[in-house]
Amino acid sequence: LGAKDIPVQLDPKTEQSRALDHIQSSTNTEEESCRNIRSLILKKLGANTYNAWFTKVKFVEVSGEIKMKAENKFIEDYILQHFGSVFSV
Image 1 (cartoon, helix red, strand yellow):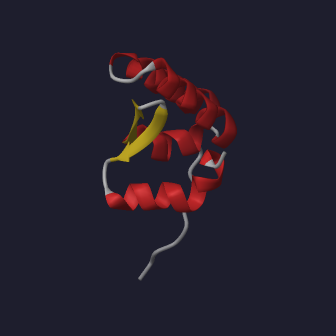
Image 2 (spheres, one colour; image 1 turned 90 degrees about the horizontal axis):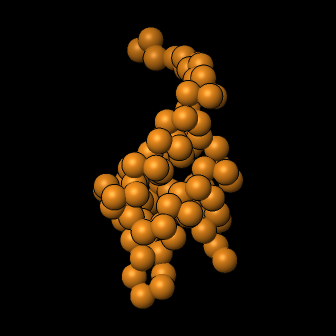
């Protein structure tokens, strides 16, 4: 059908800046502890992964625990399946 892989070149500095801007912009909607989790995810998984998946979720602190709320079930399942080990304590 003519489908093929096309490599995508992403500028690392731009991606890092986008991720940091996203974390900073969450100041109005998330607690500091949630932003700290975002920063750890960025550090551990990198800017490309953060921008692709973690800008689509919200983190909320409930009774001292941080919970993730995804835009939809697909995103939630994908993150848990591929990055769940990052969240294990």
